[in-house]
Each structure stands twice: as structure tokens, then as C-alpha cells.
Image (tube, rainbow over all chains, first blue to last red; front, side):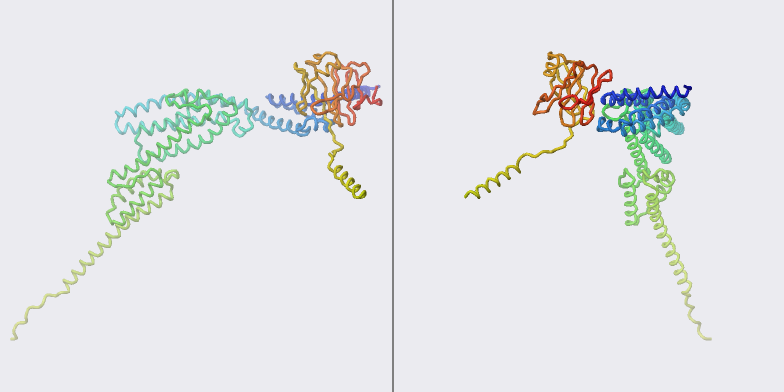
Amino acid sequence: MNHFTRISFYVFIVVTLTSLLSAQQSDFQVKKNFETEYNAIKGGIDSSKSTGELDTLAERIKALERQFVNRKNFLDKALYPETFDSKMENLKTLHVLTYDRVYLIANQGVKIEELEGRILLLTTRLDTLGAERNRLFDELRASKKTVATLQAAIKKLSANLQAKDRLLFALIDSIFLPYDKNLNQVADVQKEAISRKLQKSSILTRIYDIAADNVEFLGVTQLQGKDYASMIDQYQQFNNKWTGLSEKINAVHVASEVKTDNQPKTGGATSGKKAATVNEEQPPSVHVDSVVTLWYTKLTASFWSQIAKEFSSKGIALRPFSTGTSFSASIHAYVDSMKASESDASIFVNDVWKERIDKDWRDALTKETMLGKAEYASLDKAVSELGQRKFDATFIGYIIAVLVIVLLAWWFLKRKPKPASASPTK
Amino acid sequence: MKIPRILFTLSLGLIVSSCASFKIEQVDFGWPVEGVLTVSNMNTVEEVRYAVSFIVTNLALEEFQDSTALRGTQLRLLRNTEGFYFITGPRFKHVYVMKQNASELAMKSKIDLNERVLKNPALNQRTPHIELVDDDGFKVLLTSDDIDEGSKK
């Protein structure tokens, strides 16, 4: 008996014995064995951390299928309402999804370490900016400086807030980056890890503080017309980023059921002064939502009241306005009234509209959230026509006056003095 | 007068017979896999999938002459295609075939395993039989009345 024949013989014996034993097996035991191995593989997939482990599990899935495919009809009944095929399909799908996730994490391992370092650096820089912000706010509140120095402090503070804003969202991107595209497929364990990172870096507190700082900034400063365009942009960018981020934070929060006891309620690592009442039943983003809304409200209120002052300081009484629509209606009403009364509108047109609004406020007014380009163009046209009308009337007056003078001159020249009475004929 | 009376009686008989209960035949009551049921301290078992539960006191008395003998043990329960319940377990010398009545299981037959004491039995559905397997390669096919003689080893 050669080596190959001997091996074949042993294989035959083993297969025969296995068949006999399986023939003796109870159906209940078949079902139980299938379920035990199925659950073991599933548990292995759930806890796997490397593609190597998953490769081994893929072999076990194939072996499970091979082992029980002959009992498929029985298992279809015994596993009701599931079937043998559906169970195997579930296992394979889970394996593929987990493989993709583990592969992604394994290949981004180095990147994640880099990002961890970056998160630490950004957190430190944010804290430094926080200290600077406090000093700048104190300067503004003191109000003992010259106007020029105050303007410089405002600029610095505004730049500080924007820098914090950029840094914070860079920090958040760093936390979410490895999972960003696959957040729905991220396991609960990883969502908890993200949630811990968010808490450790006091993300929600920092976001809340930035929005609250901007609200405070609007309260302590008198912004100029040209400042508002960048303030509106800053708000828009912040709001857009926050909208995207809050969905992710809420998803992570729901999945991990992490309590937010140390979030905006306590103030966290920075200022800690803007306490908000936390209702743990609400998503953690609710408090930031409310301060962002307050930011927008204050920004728009300040914006429209400053514009109103431009008119009132020149003695022009417009109908009150607080939105783009009401501002537009107010201007149109004023223009109409000026046309109807044929009053002198030169102060309104030249001193206010052309010198102040068009020069300093146009950039901000043409933002779609305020008035919009089309509506601004419409107002500008209406105001310009009012100026044009005044110009035309004056011009025609001049022409008429000149014509009258010319006619009078002609009449005087034409009217030759009567010759003296003829001398008696000699 | 006789003919109309006969006709009337025949008609009445036809009507009554047509109103009698009807049957649904060739029903398959068989379970694909046995239930392995642990006897509780209250001497009860419950098969969750098929929603069957009963007290095993009388079964314990019948097999072991001890009403508490089955507490904590596992019983094997399987219903064949005819609708009879087959019950057995470790240390049993019999398989009990039970018939379902209103709120009761009545013994249809008590299959003697020829003094064999089951160690680790299992029941399998092998239509039209029930297969009883045990350690040491023991395997017999059962009908609702007895061991199928052809399957004896």
C-alpha cells in the first residue's frame, strides 16, 4: 500500500464514520450545531479587528455552508421564519461590511495617529485663543481707548473669533474624518469612541462658546456698514458647518446613548459662563441650535437698526423695517411719496443712498439672506430715477429760463427806437 | 299516504346528513424538529414555538412512580404527521404516545423499549415514522402504536 493509497483509506474511514455518526445525530442537535457555529462566526465577525481574522472567518462560513447544505430542507423548516439561505446570506453580508470597515480602519491607522496629534495641537491653540479673546473683550468693555484703538481691538477680536471658528471645525473634521463616509456603518463601539473624543475635546462647549462669543461681540461693539458683510459670511459659514455637524453628533449620541452632563450645561474647558439648561431627553445639539438662532437674531437686528440710523441721522423718516422685505417696502414707499410731493430728494438720494448705503452697505445688503442682489438693484434703480427726475426738472427749468431771456433780448433788439420826428423841410 | 311519508323521511335524512360536520383530510401535524423541554420546579414544560405547555406530574408517576422525578430534567417532545405527541427522556424505558383532546393529552400507547434505559435520547421526524436515537448507535423507527419491527437492530 503506497502512501497515497494509505491516506485515501484513512480519509474513507473518517468520512464513513462521520457519515454514520451524523446519521445517528438528532435533528435537534443538527439545528443546535448549526446555530452554535453560526453564532460563533457572527460573534467573531463583530469582534474582529484585523482582516486576517476575517479571512479565517470567511473560511468558517464556507465550511458551515458545506457542512449543512445537505440538511437545507430540514433547516428551512427548523429555522422558521428564517431559512438556511437567508441565514448564510446574512452572515456573508455582515462579513463583507465588517471587512470593508476593518480594512478602512487598518489602512488609516497611521493617519488616525497623526490626527490624534493634530486634535491635541488644535485643542491647545483654541485654549490660547480663548485667553486672548477674554483680554480683547475686556479692552472693548473698558471703552477708555481712542476710537482708532477700539477699531483695532474690534478687528483683532473678530479675527480671533474667526480663527477659533476655523480651528474648531478643523478639530471636528479630524475627529470624524476616519468615519465620515461610513458613519451609518460604524459600529456602536466606534460611535462611543467618537462620542468620547467629542467630550474629551469639549466640542459642544466650544461650539456653543463660539456662537455665544459672537452674540456678545455684537452686543459690545458698534459695527460699521462695511463690517457686516464679513459678519454675515461668518455666520453663514458657521451655520452651514454646524447644520452638517449636528446631524452627526446626534447620530453618535443616539447610538452610544452618551449622557451630555459635561456639555454646554457646565461650560467645559473654555469660558464656562454661558450656562444652558440641559434636558437629557433632548439631543445634545439643541443648546447650540438656540444660541446660533440668537446669534442670527442679534446680527440681523443690529444690521437693520444701523441702516435705519443712516437715514434718521439725516432727518429722513422711513417706515420702520427689520427685514429685507420691510426695508424694500419702506424705501419704495419713501420714493413714491417723494415723487408724489415733488419735494427735494437730494439728501435722500445723494447724501444717504449714494454716499452711505451704496458705498458702505451694498456688500452686506446684496447678501441673499439680507436683501439679495436683484432686490438691491431694483431699489437702486428706483432711487436713481428719483434723482434723475429732479435733475430733469431743473434742466428743463434752465432751458425755459434761457429761452425767456433769449426771447426778451430779441424783443428788445427788434423793437427799434422810433426815429425822431422829421425836421421841417427846408 | 305511505309514499309521501317515506319521501318526507328521506328528504329530512338528506337535509340532516348535509348539515353534519365535515372533515379536512390529509392534514400534516408534524413538527420538523423536536422540542427539548426542561421541566420546571412547578413540574411544567413549555414548547414556545408551538405554544404547547403541560404539567408532567402524571407522566413522572407513570414512568418513575415518583411525581417529582422529572424536575430539572429534559424531555423530548415531537408531534408526528398524524398529530400524536411522542414523549420520552433520559432514564426512560418507554416512549409515550399522547393524543390531543380538549385541554388534555391522553395516552394512546406506551411503547416499551425492551428494558432499554435511554441515556441521551432524541426524536426525529422521519415521515411516516418517528425515529428514536440514543447513545451506542441505538436507533428505531416508531409508529403511533409500537416499534416498527423492520427497523429493529
